[in-house]
Image (cartoon, rainbow, N blue to C red):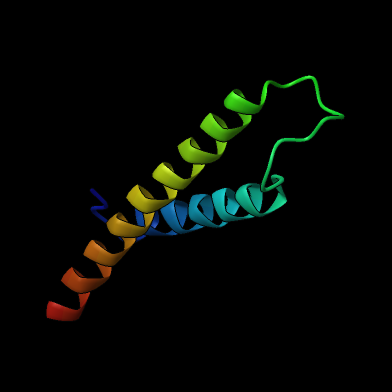
Length: 68
């Protein structure tokens, strides 16, 4: 849970980093990498999951700020 403006800024920056990382990952398995396709998909899913959590925290904080 985000409790102050500093944490909000940090969370927003982390969200942007996760979005960029996810955008740079290939959509499907790549033959030229040594990473197993199952592991590649697990990494993508992990990034997506973390992004969902971060975005929800940002939305919750923004909603609280609108109420003030």
